[in-house]
Every structure is written in structure tokens, then in C-alpha cells.
Image (cartoon, rainbow, N blue to C red; front, side):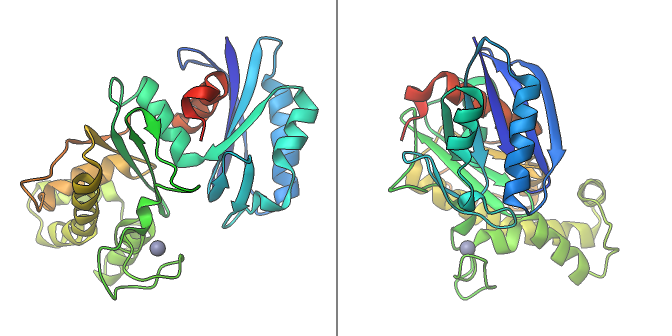
Length: 291
Ligand SMILES: [Zn+2]
């Protein structure tokens, strides 16, 4: 059995045909623009490229708020797909059932079946890139709340802190995202192109400026993780997204705050393939992820 996963990222649109063991048979992609009609046209063209008669369905991961039950995009940031009939267009085009979900939910599904969260039933996933996203698996089910539960980027870590895109202040997205790391680098007077790899290597050598910067980046993330662990008691916390691995390393410079509530924190294993693998698996196993 195979299915198609579509991962709509802020930079890239990825499409892949994936088998039931999570192996990618074929993959293709395009650059994302802010134009929803163009994104839909790209998706249709890329799906045609990878589609075969064995494909059972299509799973699409969306950045932004999604009503997975109604298969509707509620809102988006840079690319707002709430203005196009995504599901209807893809179903008409392919004749295959289409499911829609948040991109972090599908990344978690992939890590749960094939990656860093294999064999668990209770997982917190935090995706760290330009912003911070999240998803949780509780008792083997995706946490949904009314619709869009798991937005862990908006856990408050600094009451009265910096303004966040969500309308509140002091969210962990404002302190520990890739954007926040760039701001800390600028504030430290380091070159704008300073890489996190360099900071981690400098910190390992005991460089004071790198240690201080990574501590400032990671300490609020540690606070958010401690809060989530206290509330949800997961077997594992998985950090994904482009900077997940770096955040795991940086947490060495922001030790756990509470000895009561701790869970192992590990890096995601599937990298930027998690979205398409999770989308395809969800399309093959819709009852396992259904809202
Ligand atoms: Zn926020």
C-alpha cells in the first residue's frame, strides 16, 4: 500500500509517495510563494507526478490552524490556504480521499511510527524553526482540544515579555525560535550570519559569549518543556523542525528546573521528511489520527 504526503512549508512545498513502512518511493517539490492559487496549482501538478494506481489517499500538512474534522484550513500566515478549496480540488483531480492536518501533528505521527517516538503512546513534540509549533500524542491519540490543541509555541515563559504574533506576550516562540536566536545573535554584536553550529562548538570550548547566548535561547525553552512535562507526563519530548537538534544540544546550557517532572528530551530523527511521511501514513490509517 502507498499514499501521497504533501508538506506545505513556509519555504518549500514537498510531495512524496510513501509506502506503509514509511519509505519514500519518489519525491518532488517546489518553492512556496505567498500565492494560495499558485500553491494549489503546484500541488496538483506535483501530485500528478508521483501518483500511481496503488495510491490509497493523500495527506496534507498545513502550517497554521486547521479544522481536521471539517478538512478546512482556518488561517495561515505567509501562505493562507483558507482561501482555496484545497480538499475538493485534490479529490476531484485524483479521485482519492484527502485528509488535512496541522504540519506538526503529521510530523509527530511520522516520528511516532518511524522515528524518535517509536514505541511510545505519550509524546510531546515541539518543532523549532522560524517559529515554534507543537503537537502531542496522549494515550496513542493526537491531542486536539476543540480543534487546534498543541500550539506549544504559545506557552508563556515570560509574563509581560515580548509581543508575539498570536496577540499575547512572552510566548516561548518569542524567546526560543530561530527568529529569536537571530535576535540574540544581533544583540550580542555577533555577525548576522553566525551559525548555531559555531555557537555550539564555541560553547563546548567554554567560550563565555556563546555559553551566555545559548543559555538565553534555551532557558525559556526549558521552562516550557518543564511545564508541558508537568501537565502531560510524556514518555519523551521530541524536538523537531530545522533547529530541533540544535535546541537539544543547547538545553545542556539550561539544565532542567524541576526534579519532579522530567522526561527525556530527544532530537527528531526524520528531518524534513517527517511531514510527507506523516501525511502519507495518516492517509493510509485515517482512523488512527482522526479527530
Ligand atoms: Zn504567542
